[in-house]
Image 1: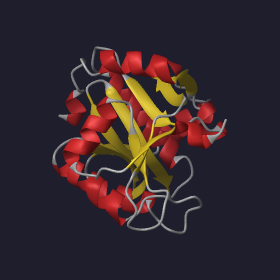
Image 2: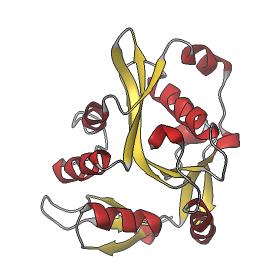
Image 3: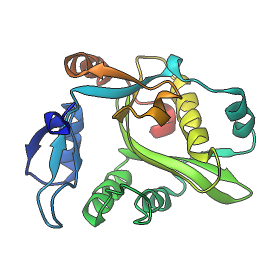
Image 4: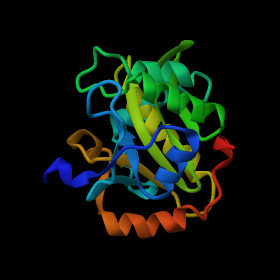
Length: 206
């Protein structure tokens, strides 16, 4: 599929109100052009999603899960910075994205789920929580399986609350498919999103 099919707009800004309105419509920004260019807005034709009951946790990952402590929002800036490390292949988080999402974190909309071991941040993820939707933005690991453990921790947190919930990972990859990520057509995602927005956020994110 041509990735240009997923591009739905160029322009606007990364102010909190703009970002939240976009997520409520199923859109998210990514910097694609040159530094200083306006944001590019995407809404994938086939959305990568993880249903909570679809998470696959192989035995090795269950064992690894016991070696880490899951924390929420104790090191969000460090998680974002680790995800933005320019040494990572296909890095896309620039200074504008970093500032915008840390501002949303300050306002209570962006959250980090972190995997700690022996007092050190070993891996984690961050994303936007709106109603029953957790829109995952990026994840990283410094130790084997730490990012996967953070994802398992996220699902565990979401399962603690009633109501319809979904983890949006934007695009399905082979790596994420191994954990249970599937694809959802754009129109089906839009219909599901309308339901998710009416769900109360989980206590972990309030």
